[in-house]
Length: 220
Image 1 (tube, helix red, strand yellow):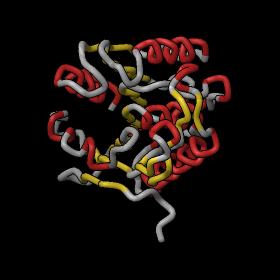
Image 2 (tube, helix red, strand yellow; image 1 turned 90 degrees about the vertical axis):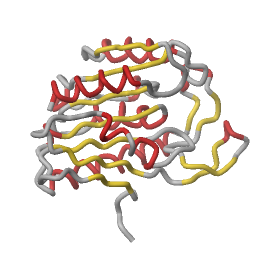
Image 3 (spheres, rainbow, N blue to C red; image 1 turned 45 degrees about the vertical axis):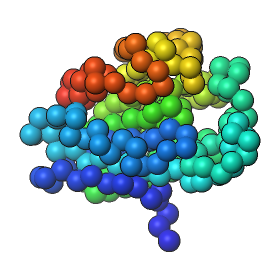
Image 4 (spheres, one colour; image 1 turned 30 degrees about the vertical axis):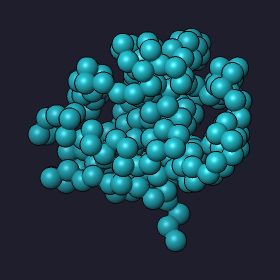
């Protein structure tokens, strides 16, 4: 059995010179964002390998204990979304670090690796990206929250990490106030995140995809 998370991997037509590790949200799987690859319309010289890992299936307290794909258990969404299983969050962070390590072993520079995450996937990447010990290209959190900024010591290698935060103004699953709190926490840690909002619910829209494409082209 592999030590790595199972994942949907989309290879570029030319040998990869960059990688994006994209984590799905609660109850979804790695196929959730697979269709976004062609929509990003990245330029021909951007040979990106997309890795869409599958979260393990675990009981989720918030959803009456139903077993579903989740990066960590969530007990409640109050208190800034922070009522969650910290041990499971840390385990998911370590799995993301292993995926980054594997890309580096495969010849991709750490500075050409981006972490992306939607909702709970973005929460994992806040902790994974800021604590990683080699400089990354960037990190984006889509409709997400920063779960435990007070427990995080950012690694100096990523003190200048480009961060994109996107959120819908009509999000009833994770209120936009969670994104605003995440921004405050990031700024408190010395980061300068870019914040974009869209008139959408807990989802992704075409305007956001275009903005993500522009941002990726800037950092890659």
